[in-house]
Structure formats: C-alpha cells, structure tokens
Length: 116
Image 1 (cartoon, rainbow, N blue to C red):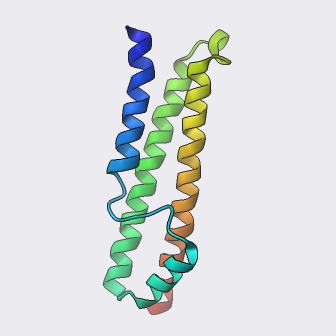
Image 2 (cartoon, rainbow, N blue to C red):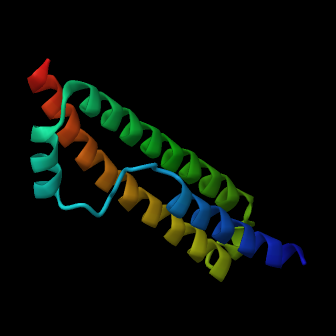
C-alpha cells in the first residue's frame, strides 16, 4: 500500500501543479508572440504579468524541492529502480518548464524596463 501511495502521490501533485498553477502564464506560447503581446501591454499589465510568471516559477521550484526530497528518501540500493527514474524524469520536466517560463518572463521584464 505504501508503495502505491509513493507512486501515485507525486503523479497527483504533478498534475495539480501542471494544470492548476500559473494562472494565465504559458510556457508553450511562442517567444515571438510573447514579444508582440508585451509591446502592446500597458505598464500595469506588464507588472501583473511579470508577477504571475514569478509566482509560477516559484511554485515550480517548490515542486522541484519536493521531488528532490522524495529522491533523497529512496535507499541507495534502489536508486536505479523505476520509482527513482520516474522522480528524476519529473524533476527534469519541471526544470524544462521553469526554463521556458523564465524565458517568457525575461521578455515581459525587458518590455517593462523599456516602458519605465
């Protein structure tokens, strides 16, 4: 039963984070579209968007910390097992997401700096 919980809990948490957090941020929006959108936004809209992206990135970093803690709990003898591989894959996916969000955040932040 514990093994099932250990496997299902990270999946459930990951699905909540991927679907529930972000609130208007997109890691899949093309950079060219983000740049065009940023040029048309007002100062207040840019500030709000930057804040949303920062919050989304922080929540993803918190998820990485949780996954890292879960990996540390796995005995060394099982580090090559399926559970450890899945957790490492989850960390890699969240890291890729953070990188994509950061790229878009930088576009909005640059537009904000140019308007102030």
